[in-house]
Image (tube, rainbow, N blue to C red; front, side, top):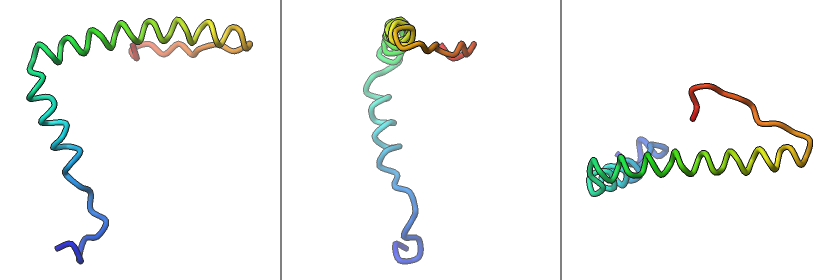
Amino acid sequence: MRKNYPGRASISPALDLLITLLSMGVEGWRRMLEERKDVYGYMRGKLEVLAEANGARLLVTPGRA
C-alpha cells in the first residue's frame, strides 16, 4: 500500500486532535473557547496600537471575532 500511495496524508494529526478533545471534555472545550475570546480582544487591541504607530490600520471583518 505504501508503495502505491507515497504521498497520502497521515492520520496522526487528526488522531492527536481527537484524543486531545476527548481528554478535555465539554467543559474544557468551553473554557478554551472563552480564553480564546479574551486573548483575541487583547491581541486586537495591541495590534491596533502597533498599526496606528506605523501609519496602518486593521481591517474590520465582521463575523470573525
